[in-house]
Structure formats: C-alpha cells, structure tokens
Length: 231
Image 1 (tube, rainbow, N blue to C red):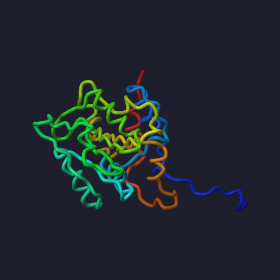
Image 2 (image 1 turned 30 degrees about the vertical axis):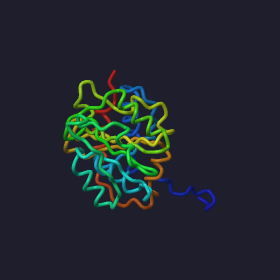
Image 3 (image 1 turned 180 degrees about the vertical axis):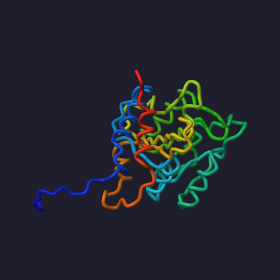
C-alpha cells in the first residue's frame, strides 16, 4: 500500500478482546439495565491490575479518599504509586459505611473516592440510595468514584453501581469487575474496568508498544462464554 493509504497504529485495549468486551457490556446491560458499549470496557489480567492502571494515570493533583476499613492492598497500591490519599473515618459509629458527605469532608480540589462494594473486609453492602449518591458524585465534576465490585455476585441479589448510571460517558465513575471471585474461577486472571470512553482512552497505548501479554485467548474465550446471558 502507498504511504498515504496506510493507517496509523490504533490504540490498543490489549489483545483482540472485542468479543469479551462485548460480552461484559451485554452482561451489565442485561442484568442492570445499563447502556454500555464495548468501548466502555477495558480488559486486564485481573481486577488488581485494572485498579493499579486507574490509579497510575490519575492527575498528580488528584487526592484519593479511602475509608480506614477498606481492603488493605489498596493502601499498598497507593503508597507504591506515590498517590496522595486521605483516610475517611469508618467504624462502629457510622456502621463501617462512610457516607458520600464523609468522603467530601476536608477534601480540597479534585479527588477520587476508592470504595469496594460489597466491602472487603467488613462485608457491608451499599444500599440503592447510597449507590445513587456515589454515582451522582461521579457526575458532579468534583470527584471521581472508583467502585471495586469484585464481590458483586456474593450478595443476594447482586448489586452494581452501574444500575444507577444513565450515561457512563458523562461520568467520572470507574467500576472494576473480575472473574476470580464472582465466577469462582481463580485460575482465570481476567478483570475489567468500566468507564467513560474518554477516561478509558487515557489508559490505552499504541498497538506497536504492546510486546507482552499474560492472558491467553483460551482464558478470554472461557470467560466470555460464562458471561454471555443464556436465554
């Protein structure tokens, strides 16, 4: 092909994962009434890499707000990445479930709330009103919200912040999911990040820069098959 006919390298969301990304989007659209497109989904080698990638590419001015009783490796990630963060009080006095207002207290400038739901290790699961409040906060332009839903399917009925999102592309909401716990597939290191297309684009890399990948096509096919809603 002539030089002027060649297409530039496209940004990559990893290996050829569109069928999996489509299956994940369809899962949330079917069970939570979302309106996700495959472009709202990024696939990683587990949920933790998805969280790390999100934190890694935050603007340096963003301060993370995190409860005192969250999953302890979160603090290790923040320390290791050099991300500024402040702790939100969480204990018997507030039922181990800080409110949105608690996360806003003492926060100056742009911030990001990091929360797991259901919470690991307390087991607290957010109510519909609480999830709606977090989603509204993510649309406010003041703070982003990262919800780790690794234990989504451990609650009866399963819950997701995505059930309360009208338009993910008009939001600074980040939702993490993974196959390890919910699908009881610990050997399949596949996780995903749901976000606006703009925020997802900030995490992508040119295809020519991708040289290593630790998720095999067989793993992707297995997870995609398990996520597709059977009629």
